[in-house]
Image 1 (cartoon, one colour):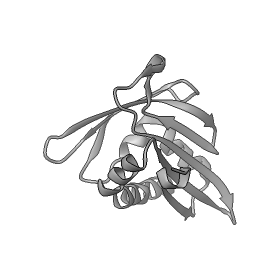
Image 2 (cartoon, one colour; image 1 turned 180 degrees about the vertical axis):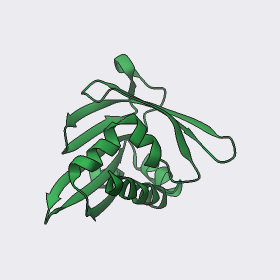
Image 3 (cartoon, rainbow, N blue to C red; image 1 turned 90 degrees about the vertical axis):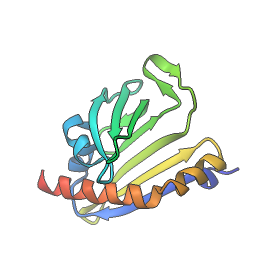
Length: 153
């Protein structure tokens, strides 16, 4: 299985400076405002944005669902690249079931930002499951919310 067969990718050319998009990804109060497609929401975000630092989110659904999401940052290049995974939790403790690694890049392009969000899965079956869960629609709606928030900063 090649990387592309395990990846889901969303890319957009966004008319917002990458520093504003970066802030929305790395400041907990901002991330909570856009990260989940409505009517879902993030009720808690604890981010230690550095390689080896933790990311802890609690996502809540409209019917009382609660979904905790814990992981670590693998790579942090301010305003350029953010890599995180749920394969580990804080202190490099292996998670019960690794699902994906997220790779988000912010590239300058013609006065705008080429935003690419990639979900890289351990298996093609995990990729397919994520796609069936609504990756394209969900991440697309969340990105719309990200753009609207970044425009207001």
